[in-house]
Image (cartoon, rainbow, N blue to C red):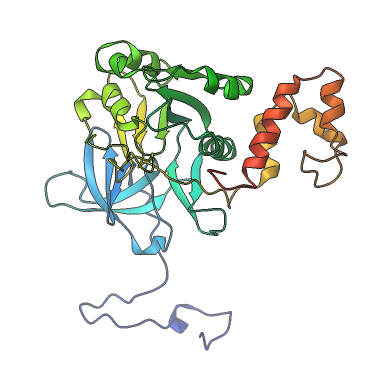
Amino acid sequence: MRRYGKHTDEDDIRSRPNRKGNRPRTNIRPKHEDAAEGMVLTVDRGRLTCLIEDRTVMAMKARELGRKAAVVGDRVALVGDLSGKKDTLARIVRIEERGSVLRRTADDDDPFERVVVANADQLAIVTALADPEPRPRLIDRCLVAAFDGGLEPLLVMTKSDLAPPDQMLELYGDLDIPYVVTSREELEGGDAADRVRAYLDGRITAFVGHSGVGKTTLVNALVPEERRRTTGRVNAVTGRGRHTTTSALALPLSGDDGWVIDTPGVRSFGLAHIDPSRVIHAFPDLEPGTEGCPRACSHDEPDCALDAWVAEGHADPARLYSLRRLLATRERREGD
């Protein structure tokens, strides 16, 4: 506790002696105005691999950042040894403001949110059409998280050789979400990777999906020079796959400035951090109709003005149904 008044001069400042030198310790932190700019590519047990210009640098977070953590996609400022040579370590002294954030919680009762990826433009939601079976509730939750975090969604359906995409297209066609359908053969020697890549060029795209859907196989087809391990199998009893990706990793697309961020497979996607009132922003054709809604309207109650707005022909009824389905997702657990 400070024992001196507000109006002090330098002679009044108390500092702890430094046994290794004569420089006193203070609470004043340097601004690091000459720090180099970089991008976080991956995080592993407190060590962060960052890209600075054309080289990768290993770094750790500076103590003055406190509990604020850097995640894949973050733009950061670094000081120290920036050569990227073996056994060198730089220091992250600043995390720049994020343009978008993909967040989730462990479940809907968990108040602790986890930032998965920062500064991505797009969220590619990967789902298999069979083996394992599609989980629409998980897809809906990823959509809500994308809308809330400022990412544009892209639906990628894999394993079309095992089941047709008709049912999934019927569920999500009204949301006007871009989609790509792929099969195993097309990924191995066909044009599936090129069709997916058409949506990725010049953008930072985070890939998310539950285990066993072929997400990492797809990433390997997109970035063959950076192949990741894909030895996961789907459990015949539970219908769920094994995690083959254990940490998020940003990979550059060759020939342009696009990036692919592969993330670990998820088995749940909690939305405890999502304010349902923000989901309407993803439906610009419906948003004007909410002006007549009662205060704190859930948009799924008898007095909601959206029913009259749609009945008057201002928007497609299927769009209102889609909005309410996504809002309801926030209130129920995935898998229900």
